[in-house]
Amino acid sequence: MLSTLTNQVEEMGYGFVEALPAMGIALVIIIITSIVAKFAVKITDKIIGSTDLRPSLRNLIETLIKLGVWIAGLMIAAIVMIPSLTPASLIAGLGIGAVAIGFAFQDIFENFLAGVLIMLREKMRIGDIIECEGINGKVEHITLRETHVRAASGELTVVPNSILFKNPVEILTDVKQRCHTVVVGVAYDSDLDQAADVIRKAVTSVEEVDTEKKVDVFAKEFNSSSVDFLVRWWAGSTPRAGHESRDKIVRAIKRGLDDAGIEIPFPYVTHTFKEKVPMGSEPGEPSTGS
Image (tube, rainbow, N blue to C red; front, side, top):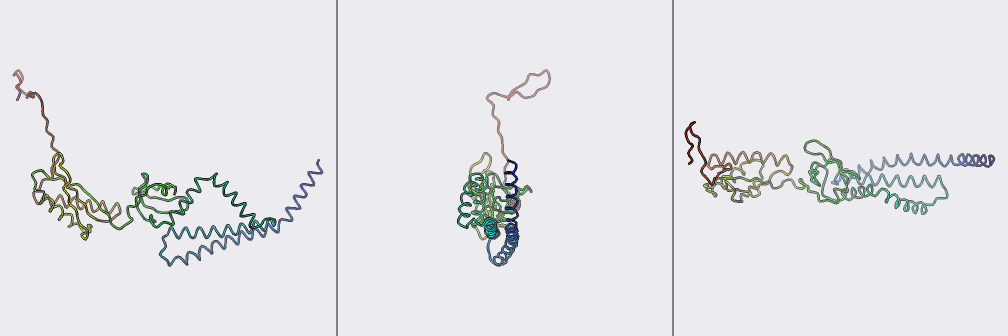
């Protein structure tokens, strides 16, 4: 029993010694693969650096090239260490292993594939302001697994790519300008045509407003104490640009309506009673209603 165990240990030792040259060559191949992968990424970056490709698409191309070089290098190293392996058998084994790994890490591969598709599509670029599933902010970085979204208040949200791929994403900065709105109320005794003209002139006087596009002033509804106008204009698409233009427009409209003598009413509340309400009286005197 002991001699059998000793013989097996000796055979393993001889086998290890015999495999040392192959292991050394495989290690050299891995080192060369690492160097080649770095050079391949640098060459690719120089080639596509002068193109108009989106940063996310450049990242995808560089990642795929690096991954391809590493797969080829590891396959060569494996064949050197185990001469009985052939490229066909290795590829077949990788295919079976990939299926098993795919079931075990389904979520990871789902995010990976979603990342590839997000990088390939033209929309949602780095720097865009997006909204998705309650997430609002600026896209700072897109990787093959996740996307980094920075909120206006500074918080960073790391979003799995599958969420952005499977759910509707609202891109606020897809174009340089978008339509903004505000509601303005005027008193019922106001001349609505005059009020609309005053509001329109106030909006067009704001520098941030694109006057080449029409400024809309629509009488919207009869409110409790005012007739409301829906005012629409085009300005910068970022949230800050929208806030800045809205701030100046509200100020300009208020100033214009005041100068024109048009009232911006506040809500009036009228109380009615079924019975007369007793009024205050001097002590000892009976109270009287009116």
